[in-house]
Length: 155
Image 1 (cartoon, helix red, strand yellow):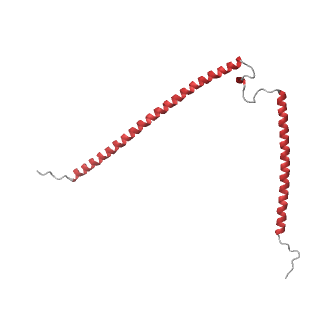
Image 2 (tube, helix red, strand yellow):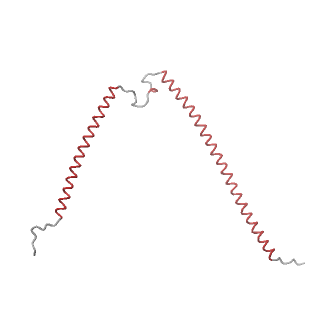
Image 3 (cartoon, one colour):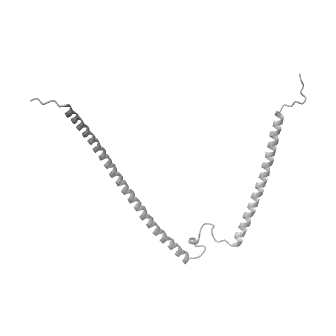
């Protein structure tokens, strides 16, 4: 009983089946890798959504507590309206000032502005004099560099 030798068509079919089996094996491995990556991404997306929800809940809680604190401060200000009450201070140096104090400050600022303008004019004049002197110096140097033909003799 000798087995018959495979015919070329059978060998080609066997090679094709082996190639297809390897391809299916590679595709299955790729599919498994992609599935695990997809699962990991879904878990991360769920964690990110949970974090967003936690932040939104914290924000609502914070806004609620801040509003309650602000209301309590306003109540305290109304209950104790004295100017020396620290809760009534708006900001350092921002207390209501009298019109006379504002006029004094305005005069001081105008005087400082006038002094700065005068200082600027003086500096501009000094710079102008320097620029004039520098131009004259350059012209003098250029004049000295030019050869003078007066008094020259032919030798």
